[in-house]
Image 1 (cartoon, one colour):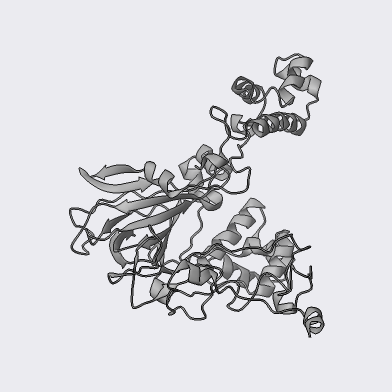
Image 2: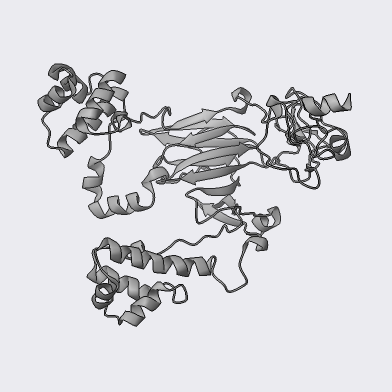
Length: 442
């Protein structure tokens, strides 16, 4: 990570905050277990003074104390381990040179298969992005090609953004599939689905940005399911083959947890018993009114009775760049700096379309960095002189470009790039004057 985001060498990230939160967690755990400071100290074999020292930020976290607490109290060591804030300035920055220096090549099947590089990542987020370049080049789309080597799938969901000629292979319900991907195409995949990537062209870079995440199954939920064991954990899985089957299984789980007979639930909700039995068996779904009535009867939130039904096909959802929706924000022609006479007049009044949340003008107006437009496709090898060095795929197809300079907002995606960065900086959008300043100027 950029050294601007890191503490002095040899100092763990967020050391002071980590020590302060360690004491707060210990104090909170003791309170939850109905312990006073004196009784907590006695449980842990500490003097009152030593216990008080562990609560102070100067003492910090102690593994020995966490293990002792987990021995005498009904909690886990991780309940007393605070998180470290490695994002004190609100962002994490990883420069391209730092990413390149982290490059490592992994082999599969005895050949160089992937080159991995680090990306910006934080301890505070559940997202695990990775830059991955395909080193195995294939000349066909056969998922059983000898140079295609699969993984076994993983627990995390994965969103993948492709750059260059990439083949994406995935396996679902015993069937192997392959998709020909290009720059801008993206895929979302379900956990535990075996998959892999290869390149189709040795002359053109092919890589992906793979963003994996665990959703709500990570953290405490994962640890608790692991403690319950695979058989019990498997029982919590809902049938998602259809909305009716999922809602039926969901309803049955709430009735069983409440030891509530279906007939009694029908009486409480006013839903006919036969109708409710059909829902519980997965033959039909509840209407919105029935969801509301049944939720009130079971003392649940209505959303607790609404199942999540995947919209993925064969475990994946694919978004081709050619058919993906795109838009600009703010819309073209929308100014973001308020009245044109600001800051010369100090006016903060803005017409409705340009209304902002700025509370007061600053001494100098905001400036926008000047950046050229970058190409969005690499289907042909027409070099774009305006593309910045190192931009993924420095070639453009049919002159199609996407302007990523906020100072220049073309109204069409098929617009030509400016001749130079200076040309972009010379033509920023000018917001209109507000009605009061326009009248004064007149």
